[in-house]
Image 1 (cartoon, rainbow, N blue to C red):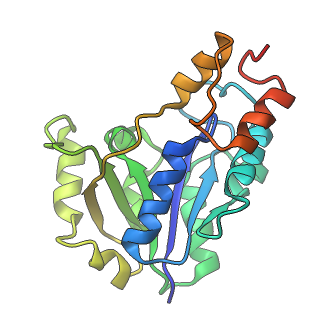
Image 2 (cartoon, rainbow, N blue to C red):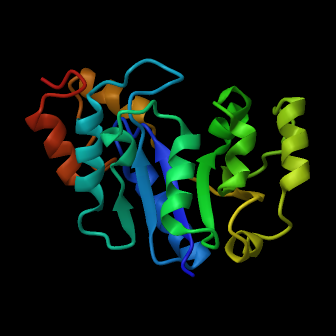
Length: 214
């Protein structure tokens, strides 16, 4: 059964760092596709710099010509709070009991996991694949997360493809040096963010005068 691999995030805005990481994941794991799931109204922080629908439309534009990547609108179209647990439960219900589901996140997000709603239940529904910068030593995590990682860490990534859920794997990956914050600052300053994101996304930002574009 083909595993479901997805990346969540605000994607405010989506940029080439997100997209390149997703494509590398697809190739490294040998799956057909990686799905990007933009979050709805964030539970843990302030509303991003544009509407949820605009963030979704930018992700859809970004992946429209790349069959290896897909956009999933479920969190933005849902009336429920944007809790990852609800998304995992819905994906599991759709895919059935045997399909491997792999939730991908960066190390920064993983280290905040103990503040997430019912985070210790995530592995009942999926695996967690954590992308760490090279040289990460794990020393920054709190004790609860360290114990969680030790209890569930898989020795090899293949284990995430063989079982439906239950494991954590940390993979070192060198990301492109692009951040959404940097892009928003460039736009607000009247500078061009071209080549940091797909052209259709930059055109969308201009057409909708987002992030202080003028």
